[in-house]
Image 1 (cartoon, rainbow over the protein chains, first blue to last red):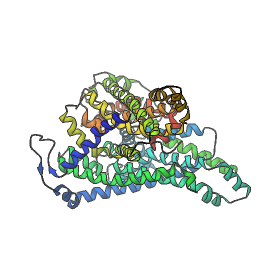
Image 2: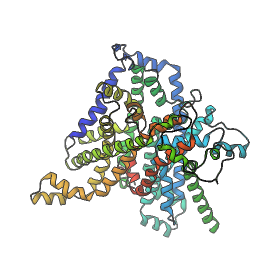
Image 3: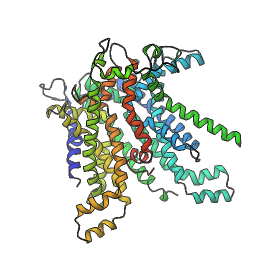
Image 4: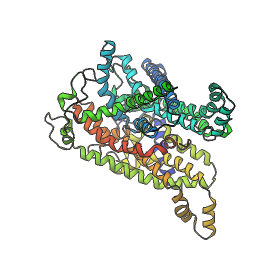
Length: 284
Length: 281
């Protein structure tokens, strides 16, 4: 019963990936298919490691991942604690918060482009009237990076919130009641009853978000196309550019493999954590 | 104590407003006239107009901009590809998930890991070889090619999510049915499947969203005939002539409307879906 799946996944993922593994050792341009690929050994990989601009892409990617995962974690966990206790209308609030992550990154990018617009954007207006400065969202390097991080955080901090909240709500009620009867302080209750329940889930959230923002493409592409200059040019964008603007297919394949290696390492961690998160009984 | 409670309410309202704002603002923009969009300070109150919506589907943009293209077709393409590929993915995916849940075949964990890992690959890394493959097979700019691709995208997700649902239902009922002479497939179809109906609904809606929202592959592999909404959106946004924000906002409003409805219905499954069935919401 798994056979159709196996065939399709092999045909559309495994086989093409093997193909591009091969291509990463060749000089080849998809633009000139009639020109046979020329074997160059590790030249493409050598280019990756020695080209200065690639290191800058690494730094940009690192800033993006650290900034957006960090913010998403802080905001997400705070939101979870804010919404932890039942109240009227919680369902509606949750619906509002999860809506962003279901939207197309392209749409989200366009929302924020409108908000950041230098001449009539709302945020431009707000920052100008409040602080008297023209921030130049998406116009200057640092605000552009921050702008991308804000957009990603808007979309995905509720995801961290959801995971944390599900951990909080799964903490056994009788333990919480006992803690109350025993007059255990808040910090004790948190440390010994709640934390063990939410810790694996929070780690899972951080890992998933790290993986996703490492690959983030659509949002950045729509908002800045890597600009201004190369301020928001992450590895994912660089890969796109090398592959589909310079049509250096060999080099792009090598870069793709570098990114794959990172994601494979991360997804191994993910699976290990996920199997622990789904059985929290084994935790405490 | 009362003050604290009030502070909490205020905070919750503020947070909700902040998260709803970007969407609300675009929806408002969609109903604004050109002059109301480009003013500073931004206008919160204005006389609404439907012009922007009307202009999406008409071919006559006054300035001859990219909007003259036919958005009706792009919406239809998006819907066709989404429903076609999700239907196929659900059919094969639930079968595969059932197999993975009920038969402890050799290397099952490895097989499941491989299936999941295809979903974790960075899309940008896969798009190059798929592009070459499609070009060789003449699948570029075809409905068949896009449906196959999106089916392959959704399969790993459907399998992982549905497996977690199958794992939860007792196998004894199916075993009893088979004792009474029904075949394994009949037991799957008549006994197991009805018990995971809600799971199927959840998996289907989340896969529909994935496909409806997909950008990168569509931008590389579709052409004028098969173009989907996000691609057309991006093209309009990055056009040379400057952006017609009113029209763009109207398109976006229509584009995210089904998503908003799904968001309201879907709360229960979202967490499970986004973590591949490992976390029960």
